[in-house]
View 1 (tube, each protein chain N blue to C red):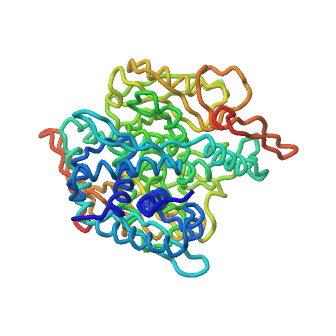
View 2 (cartoon, rainbow over the protein chains, first blue to last red):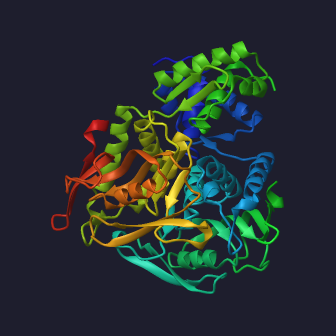
View 3 (cartoon, each protein chain N blue to C red):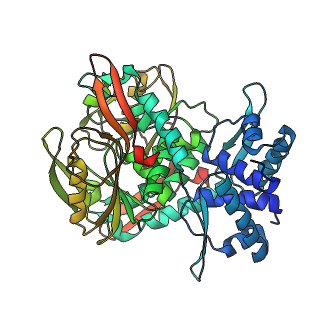
Length: 271
Length: 271
């Protein structure tokens, strides 16, 4: 089908953005749009500049035999600020406080519009790492983690709380939840992760860091390198967490049941 | 910023497709692109035709005061066939067979590229329903369910296997797993679902249908209307499932441990 330049650029952007971090060859587009290589190259230049001007992410051309063009979702500091402050506002509503000084946040961490953006923020933070897998542990971090995996175009691996018959041979480890002090188990199929892979760990919440540390220990069993840890919310206290190096999007300072106040703010290094 | 038509159409498509089923007003684009309403209207016409010609989904204009323009992801039968046959091929590899005649499929149901497409297939199937929530139960259906919720632009609700302190007051129900005959529990925060809502249920696997029935019973507690049930894989046997009306993407006919064969095929009504 012959498509005019007007349309070609639109279709090119649509196809690239639907498949973040996936490399398309120029021939893919010359065939699809029935256009010359030179025309497609010009389209890419226009698309590239457009995405930059409007801060919609980056289109990158990769030279060489295995080359082509790909879309990298990038969230700017300005956008981080907007997204994260909006979540803070939502999270600070007093009626979210649950007995025990917990915050109800299922509606936020399962909202596709929100987790899609959070996934892109994490992908932006870890874009310079060669990531092979995104790792999370069931349950609440899964939506954010799959969106991060989507933005990075890598598989997601979900660690289970128990060993499941449908996983085949599994590796299990015990770990101590830093906040409750209880011993917990996590397990994963032996075939889930290739040995020596680079992984990032994504979760919704970190208090003492015991769960993240458990995931890191599990990665040791696969000789995997943890090249990044990202959590949506980290508590301000304890300041010293078991995991040293992690990227929180939000900091939870205080939940006060008496005065019905929640104090949560964006990680200042991101905005 | 003033943007030329070439670029405007690309940017318009990018913004619409990043936010499926979200209505944008024309003024949003006239402001963003610093262009006249008539120009934006013409851009929309071009974008609309382009998406149809290339089978990339549909751009729809909504007239009236609350009107605007939105993108509806639509997966054609031709694409269904391609996607589903590709998954069947992957699933049929003999080394996936796990003792007990289970199939290892974590790598498929947690692959963002795959689940994103499956989410769009479900969204296409249920596009004529007024859906308020997508419902699933932890754990393996979550990635497909959040992608379905994303494509439909509605919140996801995850039913938990146990009652959690971080959920506040919960509703719990017991149900009988149709395949194992065991009594199980699922629970959900009372505030997770508005009374009288329309919901669709999405899960990865259905054998007898006990879990889906459990989710339907739970929806009764909220006076919610289940307007659709979608599962990625349904077993061929038992033919009579507890749930009558459901849309499977794939049918699993047989897993034979002895001959190391797996027979799985796409739902013929979708391709």
